[in-house]
Image (cartoon, rainbow, N blue to C red):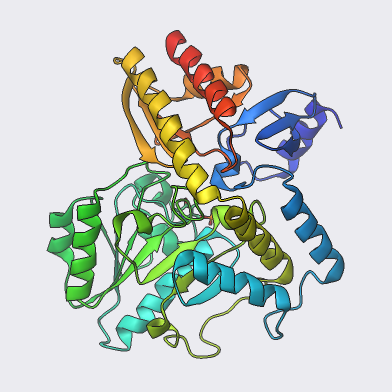
Length: 396
Ligand SMILES: *Cc1c(COP(=O)(O)O)cnc(C)c1O
């Protein structure tokens, strides 16, 4: 099909919920993607922080292809070797003991909140409140929507699920004011992704931990975007030394395959009794092959350390841009390979200018250029991305 036909046919049949770029992607290789007219782009977006190993990583491709030929799905009523292997690697990477697999970030967060509710209500019938933060993003199902702190996503869906309380992010006083014995969980992103790459202080996270301990509330870190080496540690919580009670993961963990879930320490392993939670597809053999190949490759290629190093380099280069365009760049922030450049005014022209120069970046929260490239990005590719941003800023 030519580009026009693809666009028209999609627009005719797909629900019009996405604002799409006028590009038809055909294939990828490393950190580059190609449209169906043969144009090459360097990708600093990775399909929303998903393609951790870039495109077509041979280990991941082989693992998924071989597993597809063997057995794709068999339900969780049986054991498979690949699930045994994957679940162990996830437990080790998260620093937790027990893992549950789901299919997307929202579903991982739903499961984590259900576990927290069960934990709370088993102690007291009124211990069901879940606190989350303004400008957070936790998903689009009814409950994750209620936990998501952005009015934009709420409009038209009321009444929202009850039992959710929102407070300003990185504001310990605000959290303290709503904490009581009826709180079963505090759900936070250790770095807010969609909200504009906001990095809270370690001190804040430590204080949140203390409050959760005081009121016996579970601390859930939504690491859907920050997990799986993205920040230069296996999971973002490892920077602060604040260990949550529940970690949720998704985006990068399957290297592009849709798979997600949550992990807990042994003491929470039996909050759910058999039958209390489940899913038909979660952790099926194909998903587990993707998870195993992705995590094993991050390990064997030492990507955690490389992300820390490349992220530091990327940050330095972005700070140089800020120094060059002090009136246009309001802030540069992030950690590892989740970086945000807050520009004065709209971010859209920057994204479009980069695209015209064959570099894919994203804008979130209106004016924050979000850079979440594949974890395997090279310094040369970072230089190309920075050069495109430089041009875009010059033209603003
Ligand atoms: C993307 C995202 C989600 C939702 O994940 P889906 O796979 O789209 O359901 C939840 N939390 C965070 C922090 C995210 O970045």
